[in-house]
Amino acid sequence: MQAPIDGLLFYSERLPWGTSVGTAVREDLYLTPFTDADNWTLYHGDCLDALAELPDSSVNLIATDPPYFRIKNLPWDRQWDKPTEYLAWLDRVAAEWQRVLAPNGSLYCFASPRMAARVECLLGERFCVLNRIRWMKEAGWHNKTKKDALRSFLSPWEECIFAEHPGADNMAKGEAGYATKCDELRGFIFEPLRAYLDGEKERAGFTTRRVAEAFQQRTGSRTVTGMAGHWFLLVQWTLPTADNYAWLRDLFNRNGGEYLRREYEDLRREYEDLRRPFAVTADVPYTDVWDFPTVRPYPGKHPCEKPLEMMEHIVRASSREGDTVLDCFMGSGVTGEAAIRNGRKFVGVEMAEEWCKAAEERIMWTPPIGESVV
Image 1 (cartoon, helix red, strand yellow):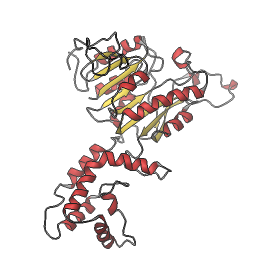
Image 2 (cartoon, rainbow, N blue to C red; image 1 turned 90 degrees about the vertical axis):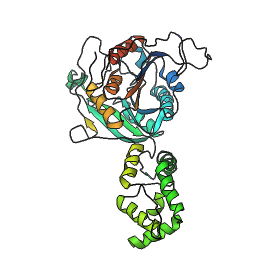
Image 3 (cartoon, rainbow, N blue to C red; image 1 turned 135 degrees about the vertical axis):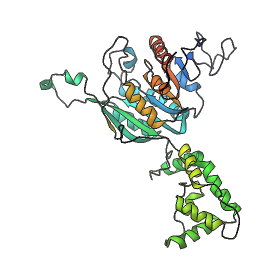
Image 4 (cartoon, rainbow, N blue to C red; image 1 turned 180 degrees about the vertical axis):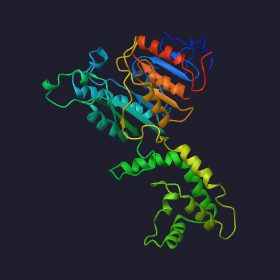
């Protein structure tokens, strides 16, 4: 990686997405690009202003740490008097997350112990919540509290809500209205594979009913439906197993022909590329209880800074190289550093100019893993 790039764009006027300096723009279309480099862009301003200008489905991973509501004695965390006001604001943000997140993308949203349940319920109205991760903190105010003065148990943890779009990982939940959302999204994500299987079925002169009847005879099922219909229809679509794909190929070519010529491994790789990425091993935290060490005090530390190791874990687990990671409350830019270090692109938004500058400095000098700054 080369040294910090010359000619980074610093915009004093609010410009729309992708607009160059000096270009005339409409006053009602604007963003605040603070820094614009090849693989990362920082915006100085309100997250709702920035999110409103991002294209639909343009982000693969949202990993963000919004205000917790009256936890820090700072203006940005005390701008709401009541929890309902805070939740109403967060729902506006979540609506934009829902729009900009790719169909197979992931959302990680941190929340305080006091508000975590309500934040999770709020996000559950727009996303499918997969995990409520607890980040257990060895260091914190719970160590300094007078234990004999307590009137309730302490909470030495923060919550991170991990979510996806409904049905993005080809899972049916059976909740009212949920199945329809799953089918719509699944059809969008996996349509290339579904269309291939359905097209080959039509070319071979088969109907879904004929395939289902043949599959019934093969399996001895009492019903004609079974799994066969799900290989061709939008309703709860699923990829056939290797064994069933081989059976379909034999069935379609029984009377001659060259149908389903693609190798199963090719289909499986495409399926994995289309579905929501998630990759953990026994060597990294794979449960929903994490114990990453907190960030120790140092000059210039953000009051809510998350550990780089934890943010890298999120980036590696739920995105692929070249994907775009968004943090619309980026603070000092730790999420951006985690993204760039691991070969991702990054979009960050921050209201405070001092933290935009800190994030810029941090990310500017961040080489991808295996490279060094010259």
